[in-house]
Length: 427
Image (cartoon, rainbow, N blue to C red):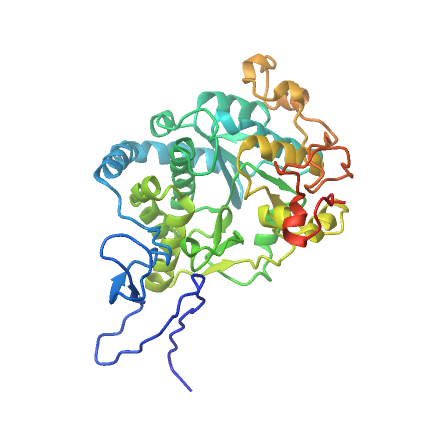
């Protein structure tokens, strides 16, 4: 029997010959030192070289996932951080008034730029079509165009031009490009501000649709108590260890532990610039704060039906068929693991989860209608029923799409890759 227990997670995704050494006679350590046979500065594992102390982000193939930021990354971050710190008291005062007026027990936080605004509007339209109350939803737009669209469709928006000015309006072309990285600052700031003001929150990306109100799940008193709950990203790459937490859908209880975590993330956001990922930085801090502060983190298992996402969409036909047929326990669906907005739009359309009318796609509010009162855009833009369109025969769809092309350029069905069923459609 033991009074304390130290747990070491020993999965080895690099499939290297792995050893463990328990060394006595030293101070207690809650970090694992990693040693690898490698060159001094860069390069792959080499069994002929001596063991060297190594970053956990140095892969067997020689890729370094966790380099320190360069001075240009530090300078860029410090410039933005100075603006935030200078304006923080005023921002929090105004935001507090907005939150108090909303009167919600928990707040659903989203952030969006104009380039992704169709996905934000589709979220609102699909939620309205299912009869959900969106009074707890707070959008942090990064530009005036998105603010007008969000408010026009009936959502509460909080816009702070000074701290959002550096974020481009256009959509990211692919995951990790410059626009994508710039937009990650909004994900940091929006959560940190609401959390700092003492509100529990659900953060979600705009590429999410609801089947049930997820706040009901997190408010259930039978739910085991954790500081944070995350959708499982599904990826088991070393860079996402040890949590594989999806930073596009998670719930946070506001307390001293989480407030310190998000302040730390804010101050460490220069790492996002060099690592090209908000997710990697957040997961690294989750691990440290779990060890140091006792932060309790729950990542829902990827097999759990309630919170499916891109992993299931692209790799689990049976799960998707249950969702299409209405036999799933899914609470939300998150279109993660998808390269760009255009693909997300098409996949939602053929899932039967697209509710935004065509005349509102890619247009500013002023070019859609004159906004006379709150929510008038919903009358112009939101369809009461799903707008179903087939695009690819080899992707999950509400109805069979046998006459649509395959998304894979060489003609092979997506499911032939995973199920060895070349040319087979989703249905």
